[in-house]
Amino acid sequence: MKYNILHLKNIDRFLFTPVNPSSLILFRFFFGAFSGWYAFYELSTNAVFPQYIATNFYFTFSLFDVLHLPFLPPQALYTLFKIMGVSACCIALGIFYRIALITFFLSFGYIFLLDKTYFNNHYYLILLITFLLFFMNAHHGASIDALRNPKLSNKPIQFWNIMLLRAQFCIVYFFAGITKIGKDYLDGRQMHIWLNEEGLIPFLQPYASSEWVQGLFIIGSILTDIALPFLLCYKPTRTCAIVLAIIFHLTNQWLFHIGIFHYLMIAALVLFVEPDEPYRLWVQIKNLLLRKPYDVSRPNLTEDYTEASGINKTLIKIFIGIYLMVQLLLPFRPLIYPGNVNWTREGHRFSWRLKANITTGGLSLAVIDPATGEIVPATPFDDINPEQYLVMSYTPDMILQYVHFLKKKLESQGIKNPIIKIDGRISLNGRPFHPQINKDVNLAEKKYKLFQTADWLMPPPPDL
Picture 1 (cartoon, rainbow, N blue to C red):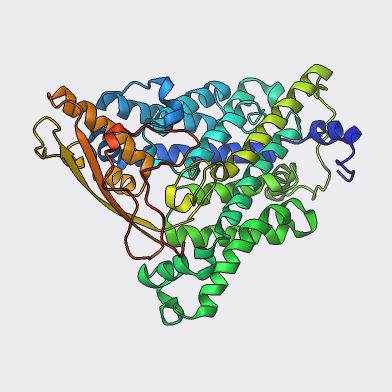
Picture 2 (picture 1 turned 180 degrees about the vertical axis):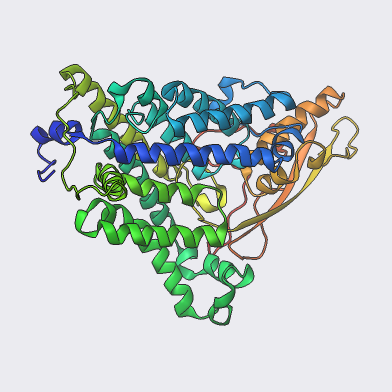
């Protein structure tokens, strides 16, 4: 497509051009396979029990409290993970495609919203992709649905299907790079810890303290994240960009072992090749095996293609515009809050802040019965598991959420209006521990205020 999409008259031509669905089909298979692997891996390692069963309290997302998600019994949680895994496999195989997407979205979404302790950018990305795939015809080939209905096989799709997914992955890359452009990251605080204290690259240990080695990793990671969206979308640089992206993600997976995130990002690279390339490659392999002549022709896209109506085109353009606007604005949410997001963590989630900081926290709890003035024994480990405590210890909104849970628990035991104070300290990117929570404030009286910095937080270190 060699036309200028900046001209409004060409937008329709850009978005609704019929293309071969093979790259989208291949991505559908990888996405379903990796998502299914995640669900069954969680079951096989019994990660469900320590995370979701061995606890008396879940840290819910504040904006989603209105959903009032029911807390399922243990056996139901295990069953939900099985449903999640089976539906993901159905997506990969293309059987009951949209029913499988809805089932996976609801089951995965329930687990995602159940406890923000385990919030991870790649879980958020999986939900977004599932949502987008529902509106796309990624089952038009290499699917059981296509076997059941041959009319679907290799039926053309409109280019906006691929464009929107490309845009989503480009947003992830770009904001992950922008997030790294901060004083601590540029000063090498995080990189020094990763290369030295954590010993992530053994053969680099003799050189890990060298400024040029750390600088190479710092600048390389920032430039790679920011440049990849442009390099992948520009055809002359696409091949080099794909090779660079594969090396980049495999290196990060080797260093940090971040679940399926980097494998998913590698799988998404198939979306950036020409849409019919996977199909053409398959034809060439098949012809080679059958000793047929080499075929360089492209598939005919005029057959079985139905032009979208004007109303449908308008609705699709509105949907794309709203979706991209939300995805482009949401990462700027931390700017709404006063203060440093690295310290307050307000607006941290849903902003693609990948590997932004290395944070360690610790807190002590003091509960006082105002009627008697006596100290009431209480410990977070009576209610939450170690991983919940670890994340809560440096996340103010979770600390406040737990305090209000503890308040209700104590009041049910006959202690009216208990005074709950927290002495919380965190170490950010290797700094000495610094007070984060004002230990003289009764947090039981404080309420969470949207888009306002908590007045019970202490000022950050002067050099932050």
